[in-house]
Amino acid sequence: MKQSRQRNRRHRIKPQRKAVSSELQVYDELSRKDPGTLLARTAVLAGRILLESGAETGRTEDTMSRICQAGGAVVTDSYVTPGMLMISFTWNGQMIHNMKRVGLSGTDLGKIQQVNALSRQLQSREITLEDCYRSLCQIQEEPGASTLRMTAGAALAAAGFALVFGGSASESAAAAVSAALCAFLLENLDFCTPSLRTLLGSSLITLAGVAAGALFGIRANMVILAALMILVPGMLFTTALRDCIAGDTLSGQSRLSMAILSAAAIALGNIGTLLILEAL
Image (cartoon, rainbow, N blue to C red; front, side, top):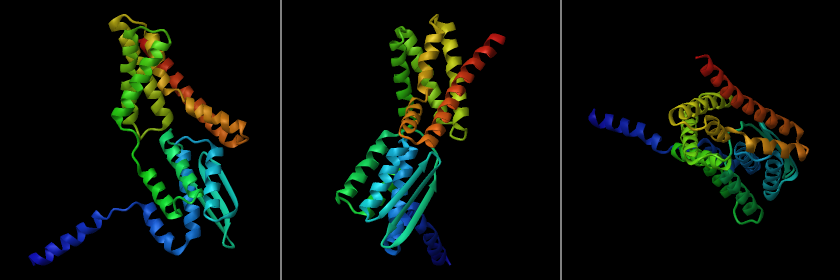
């Protein structure tokens, strides 16, 4: 009886040690059965990483098309919006299609650079399609910046903005503390929508700035202004304008709407908190 129980326990524990991502499981199946579909999934996965990392629409479509062409596809068509990726091409006489629904999750220039480097290596035959797919899976699974790193970066950025705007050293320090508190809050509010997170972050910065002004006799507006700069959707707004200029009006308008909504959340959080404090 004891031996049979030990065998059952070992049998239960063994599958947990072989935890493999779903993307790599798909790779293992398609690399043997359907290389054409693997090529389509590779292009879509690369586009997904680029789009979720903040790349503009034109760059994403171009990278997807180049990956397909490097894999032997012809008559390649790629279509990208902020919420969806589509690829269609002819491979060995058959039409292959693939699409993926995605969501914008932030900005990560490091991942954009890595995907572009893989695309160039695949075109120059330095790596195979299978190696490219595996590398993309690893890039996708890489964790983002830690909470400590994000908090420290927000503090340094806010301190620098305060000095640029003509603030004193004490105002710069207060802005750094306010931005650090905001960044820490945002990192722990993943369950909220982006607009709500921005609104709450703006409210927290306003409260911290007013408190710093009352306690230390510094300019609260300078502290608030410098700290709020970490919430401004500059990258999103710039990407929206680039999409519009490049002719991708649908993607540009969608990103621009998101940027405007984020700016409205910042203003609402700031003004609403000030009005509440005045009423009290």
